Length: 91
Image (tube, rainbow, N blue to C red; front, side, top):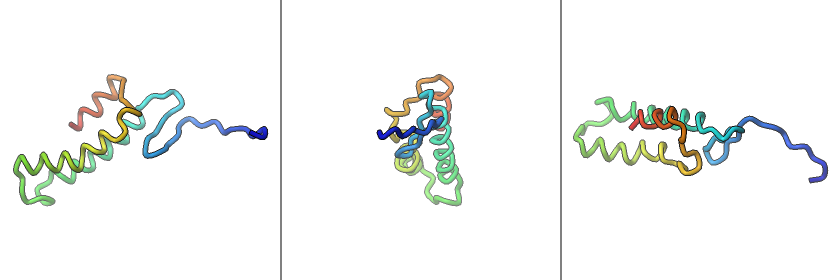
């Protein structure tokens, strides 16, 4: 386009998805797990929620935590064993 050079980048972030130049999902998995661990830390302590029943914890998990782990997963599908284990460690 009009002899304009494109800038070479090692990763691009769009719609909260990080895509690296080698198409590995390591950074995206790390970011998703980091955010999920923050939310898990909010759910677990007894000071934040009075009701500690299994149904309440399960509802909190499904509504607060899972969306971060499942957001656009077909795009950044963790296909490497280490990335899969990282994501499953939160679950």
